[in-house]
Length: 313
Image (cartoon, rainbow, N blue to C red; front, side, top):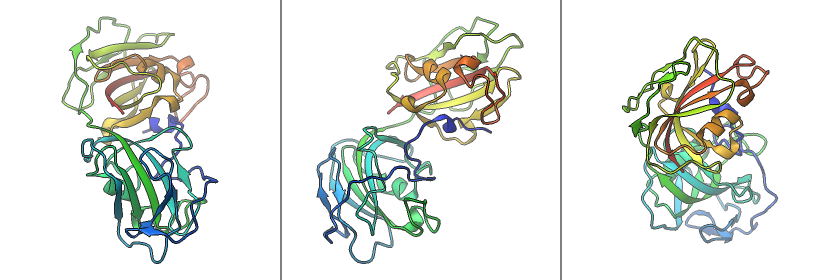
């Protein structure tokens, strides 16, 4: 099955690559605090920090320092988190990546295994509004392989993480059923049990313009183009109704920062719709991949989506 995650322009995928380096260097002094490199500048929550170089042997187990504790709810497994972070190798004075310079926080779902284990473990049970420092041994980071060229094999990593927001993710869209009276459009199931809704594509010619219709309409906030939404979806081809992607097969909703979503029809179909709703989106080729085959999807394909907008972060 092809994954729509490949249609995102993502600044950092913590399980696959450490993307951008930084020219900002921490102090090369050997200052330490509670067994981890000290923050030498920008210590307050929300400020871009700099870190000293690690001194002595790095920790062999995950080490968590709470630099400042927030007053928000405690994070739990399954929450959608929005964080800012800076990451640096134990024996380095140069960060290999940080979100502060990009001006765009990083979004993840806690405990899904899509980030390194040290993050999933170290950020669970922390209060929103907290600044956390993590010392992560190789087996909870990138292990023997590392993540070239930025992260060496068997590297111990140090992160400073600001927990900006945590949201509990519902299991399903809810709301008022909206009549699906146009027999020339696909029909979407209205179940709210967290299982995949049915998606039936008619044997008619597809629409030539973008379709974005409520199946279940909630009373939530309207989605903006700058939002990150957490969604469950089923995606199919109009031509034969074949499903080419579904979050329900993994049981893990997807985080879509809409600013980074390159599939125009999906992005435009979500903007303006209410959080908590289920939406039918039909994207003609001009709103999809056009006349180019991509990820095994034939050129000039009309794409059909049933999307639950579970929450936004």
